[in-house]
Every structure is written in C-alpha cells, then in structure tokens.
Length: 458
Image (cartoon, rainbow, N blue to C red; front, top):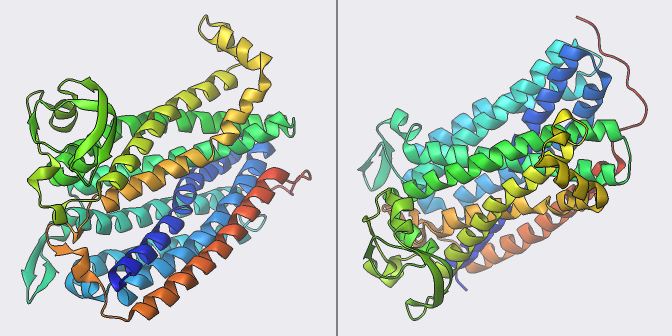
C-alpha cells in the first residue's frame, strides 16, 4: 500500500459513488419537464401528479448527488495537488464555469420548482423545471469537457513545466468530447427510462394506480427504446474514437496482444495478462475488429506488445468492463422492445401478426413485468463499467500522453489518505443507504391518493 494506490482507490470510490446519482438526475429532469408541459397543454391532472411523483424521486437523488459531487472536486486539491498545479489553467476554467453558471442555474430554479407549486402560474412553473433540466445537461457538458481533455489533451502549450490554455474553443469542441457527451447523456436517459419502467411495472403488478403508471410506463418505454438503440450505434462510433486516440485502450479492451492487419474480433476469450496471451479464444469474426475500429477490413490494429508493460492499461479490468457493458448494451433494446409490446396491448397495433402472439404470451404470464423491475440495476452496472473502462483504460496516464498518474499525486502521508479513505467509505455507505431507502420507500408508496389543488391559471 502506498499514497498513490490509496489516492486512486479514494478517487475511484468517490467517482463511482457520485455517478450512481448523476445519470438519474440528468434523465429524470427531462422526463419530469415533459410531464409538466403535458399538464400545461392538456390540463390533465394525471400529468401533474406524475410530475410531482417522479419529481420527488428526482429531488431525493439530486440532493445526494450534490453532496457527493462537492466532495469529489475537493480531492483535486487534497490528493492530486501536483496534477492540479500542472493542469489547473485548463481544468480550473472548465470546472469554474460549471459551478458558476450551470450549478447556479440548477440551484436557483430547482428552488423555484420546489416552492412554486400553487404560487406561480403553471407555465412559469413548467419553465423552471425546463431550466433545471437544461442546467443539468450544461453541468454535464463542462465536467465532461474536463474529462475529455484529460483523455485527449488539445488546445494547450507547456510553459514553466505546466500546461497553459491556448485555444478554449478547441477544448470544448474536440471530437473526443462530442462522443463522450452523447454517450454519457444517452446512457443517462436510458437509465432514467429503465428506472421509470421498473417502478411503473412494480405498481402495475400490484394493480395500483393503473392509469397513472401505464402512462408513466409508456413514456419510459419510448425513451428507453430510442436511447438503447442510440447507445448501440454511438458506442460503435466511440470505439472508433478510442482506436484513433487511445490505441492501447482498444488493445486492452479486446485483449489483443499481437499487432495484426485485418484483425478479427473474438467473441469469447479469457486474457492471461501475466503471460501476455489468452487462455482460450473461440468464435472469431474475420476482419471485424479492423472494420469496427478503422472502417477498413485490412486496417492494422496494434497489439498490447507494442507498448512496454509499464505503459499498458490493466488488461483484465478493461476487458471485462468492456464485455459487460457491451453485453448489456445489446440487451437493453430487447428489454425496451418487450416493454413496447406490452404498452401496445390496448392499441390497434395489438392485432398485428408479430405483436399478437407476443401479447398473448405476456397476457398469459403477467409476471413478465418483473423483468422490468429486475432490470432497474442493469443500466447502473453498464454505466459503472463504462466509466471503469474509460478511466482504467487510460492508465498509466492521468493526462493521456502528458502526465502519468504517479506524477500527479499529492506529497502527503500515507496515514492521511488512509484515514480519509475510511471516512469516505463510511460516509458514502451511510449516504447510499439513506438515499436508496428513501427512493425505494417513495417508489413503493406511489403518488399520494389525494388530489392537490390546481395551480393558478394564466
């Protein structure tokens, strides 16, 4: 155990725990905004109740996400001070904009939304949640700008042994950021949709508030199906970006040891990192890896042996993170498609030759709704694996090609990091238990039975 390892463990703990809350916040904010807009347009009280119920779950999640996010940023100064000194000119500006603009908008207008029920007009109240949703996505943009720059540094020069910003526009428009932003936001919308599908399915199984939760389920299914397909397509594009900018990560996630032209993709294999080989590998698709990575059948794909051992990312963690994420990525459209079939059972589409037998099966076995309940954790797992691949696959670099992780750690005592790591572990365990308990309690109870007073008319 040393300061570097403990600091990495602490930052990983803080990052992964924080990101359990971020995607649900990003996705639910838009969904709640749509519900409230539908209420404004139709004056259907059901949509208003939906906005309040799902908004309550959004607020619980949002509150814990704020606390964990603040603690995460402090670690740049406490555990990674050398990194902060080296790259602060670039990362400081991005994170400062996120805090002073995006977080400010979120904080102000979420207060308006919470306390504005029955105090301001329906249109202004709906506008406040739209601003919260927009600010949440804006916050994600600036944070991902910082992360993307660490993955692929651009728009900088090195003066006096530190990085200085030379082209802000290049930093916030580079291809790595565009792909990471789309991939992360799409995953967040997918997660929120599966969360809403699962909670709605639970209540439909119990035959509670059937109309309310059928509307919620239907809305979630459409969002989930769209963004599950977006994730599959965009994941392929993201892989091409990784191949271009971080070829060692590509080799690690595919467990490719030898450089090959026209490289195949092996569907089933097990890496043997110590001996620089694979224990086994079968079902090879000829030229597939070259095609997927470089869009040319004969393209050369570099193997891990092209890099010294100390400059390779951890293979096992990168490989399994990628495979789990990939498998779940193809499973999500299937689950969402099953939800779409279920949601069409009362429509004219129910008579279609493909839909009718599936509906008969679902009608005969209504417990299939448990599929959606049990699927709630799966997008969380996929997102955690995605971030694990992104960060572990970048090693040994904290800024790719510029600064190694070992060079960025603070000159502090081992005992200091150990104590703070234990403190974070205890604190996050308590916060996580409280948050998941509140989410589960509110989700199980469902919306309040009594109708709230209508809002002031425009």
